Length: 197
Image (cartoon, rainbow, N blue to C red):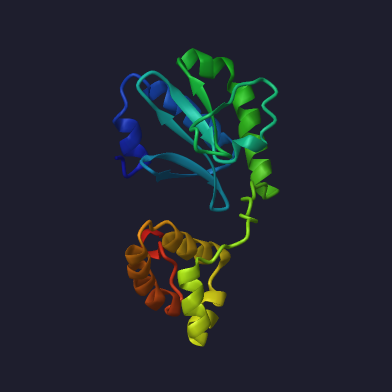
């Protein structure tokens, strides 16, 4: 994985002219350049706007919040099935980049304007009620301090603990899980905090 832009471009063979052309177009729009996730990434006031990359059969420019681009020319694809906002424009030759240079720059400038306006997809909150399993509810009824700490947790953390207990099939497993999470609840930790950065 490249640690600098120079290293990334230096490692290219077939797609080097295409990446250099995309780089020049993007930089002409006034974005800041850095390397992130091993690829050239461009930002406006420290906010990621887009990136460029070379793959086996194509190069591409991806827009972090591409869902907000008008895409009147129908150039963008959803880059991953799991992404909501990101969009990608693929190029299979240097000629295709040169042919669409003005249009690429139009998309880049629109992406910058969207960043200035702060356009973002807001995540939908889980509005379903939190169903506290009887084993946990019994302990909450018996322990006022535990109840206070549980109520201070975020709804998502409360839901994770409840699901963790409810998903156990055996009563013994439910009790074992309950004993393990009580100190975590009192410490105001989420069930999966150790996996989050």
